[in-house]
Length: 324
Ligand code: SF4
Ligand SMILES: [Zn+2]
Image 1 (tube, helix red, strand yellow):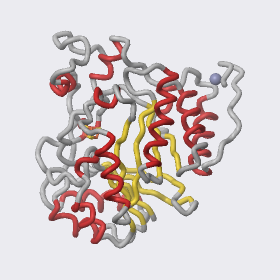
Image 2 (cartoon, helix red, strand yellow):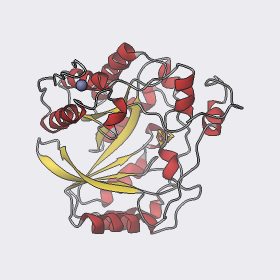
Image 3 (cartoon, protein in one colour):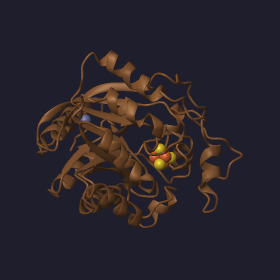
């Protein structure tokens, strides 16, 4: 995709949100009563057991922030959804699953505790709809973690975990991502949750913009270590992707290139070696990061096996590309 020419060529220091928004491709059309995505996966839980995990990508009002690398707004609305819509979306996905997964991820392309996204008056109905689930994971920006999290936890039958996008602790890159939080916000939000028996998961980017391959690896591992030091029990490593217009522009200016698959593999190994908690590599659309169709299936299978076992496995040797 070629990005619009009438927008300054690179991310301005002032008013980055306007630049990020101006480069956006069109929003997708969504159904207020259906999640825009849902699937079943397996995940290793805190006790080391492999559990069935239902992931629901809930349709709701767009997040108030404008992070540089975010494309989650594509499947959001510009207005709050009607009361009751979120529970109906969950019911819809459960019907399609045809089963009651032990763990549920209710990801809403923003913050579950943003009242414009998930009406607080819907919490009780949502909790009743998922009363079978033993563990529920929602996501939130660190600055929206407050008493609403406790209110929701108190309504649940199962335990609650909150996933927060730490992204990176690089002191110059984190501010440029336009996340509008600092490490103190993240640490305080994590402590708030932990002291109220709510687990913490951190999303960490592998090679965000403004880093080369080696820095992308180094700071992913440092960021995972920081998340664990704040009490996170899970770190999810997300290879940074294009797809929102702004990231394509940064590719054109040479300020971003997606990480290589080898960098994600190495980040997973090194973060696991911290031995501080579970580490998962995000495998969605993994082919974007591969340069070799011959070894991709085996490398994806290896990463999936490491995610489930939390143990290192021998690297894949490829006769076509020479990996590793
Ligand atoms: S806080 Fe999350 S959902 Fe909101 S813009 Fe940033 S990355 Fe996207
Ligand atoms: Zn290969």
